[in-house]
Image 1 (tube, rainbow, N blue to C red):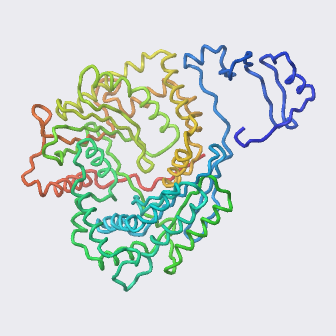
Image 2 (cartoon, helix red, strand yellow):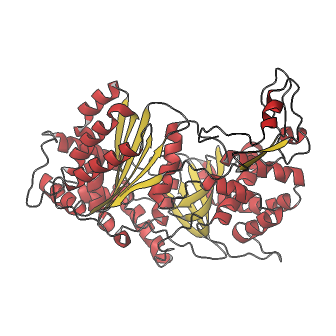
Image 3 (cartoon, one colour):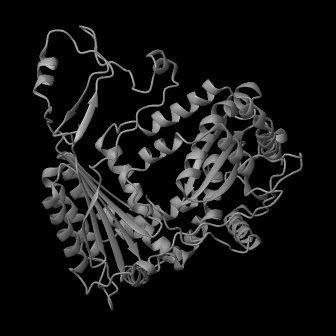
Length: 559
């Protein structure tokens, strides 16, 4: 099993049966380890055959091939991340690899900073800080890459993140170098110069690179449409234009003062995974703690004061809330439309229902709108999980249809597809159910994939490391009746009497400048140099229209 333990048969006679020349017959039962475990033989391969793909709840092997036999759900795993250090604003999680058995490690660290979301200047300075540190580490990281060690530094919603990965032998040495540089920006009260590791002239070069990135933001209609949705849903996020204006012409002195204020109080959480035991994890904890306290009297952020990740509550209305913007590239002929439905706070049942709706809707939506009608060259629907708020998104990018035609066509599709679900036969529905369950029970392909999955639970604060298994188990209880009820509540534009019904629906439209209907409804931009200000004003007006109401802090129950 996954713990790599041998088990003893309780009956001496059983050993003879397993070692006999005549094969065992299916149905043979016994027990292991003094009746701690029971077993039953459910399939026996013929000579020369491999594993027999037969499940105990199936009457025959044909069910497995037809895809209507629900996959066996494994017991809860014992090999999940464990908290090995929790003190002084530092949490460290650890998981020793028992699957891939390679000499690799992966250390991930997130640093929450006090006051990061107070202003666009603070967020822009954090972007610049990450660029400066990455630039200063270029030579060190190049030498490390020769030894198959890599590192990255990036901005997060509440601070910044660090990743160090590769061969585990010297991984913590590289982590120590990265942390030493990052934390050298702390404790610089009364100083106006950068840490010695930042070479002369690199501040201006990194600032110029960052300003260029801000100016080029949203030049693609599809990505800008998604970005517009996220900016409207997450009020703490500042736009690229507001950060561009805030940091333009900033001096080194002002940057140092701002970063010293942001980094004055921090809270750190880390995850060490791979070819590392608990002693290695404790060593990593001491390295991180040493870096946190090396340059200043460390002051942590209380758990209740960590910056909240809030999501706007979409109003429950008969119509919709629309946000319409022009493409930021005046020559872009494409129009992107994203219709977003909000379901509410995270819970296991709703999460699984939304995944099942996507499983059932995705292919028919693409087939109808993309293949048959040619409504757009990018057509998709997907589940959305934004800071603990469940949602669902339908997206179309087109060069031939208007934005209003697209949003209306999506609603028409949802109206007509209700009967398709209702008339779906048992085998077809079961195939969708089993397919989704198999996807959730798939084994990780690599250490990196497993680490990323567990790390996402840590950074979101849900800590449900066995979520996929629980979701697969929950799928067993999802009947077609429950799915139809969820469809009617969240997506169906009509009530049973045929009248329009209230939904938490938002439509985001980024309209291009192409010829024909595709440019219909495109906002007129008189001064393209000020288009960023118009987008900022658009988002501000949206927040005012929903009265800045949010879902509040989301707490999770990982049971």
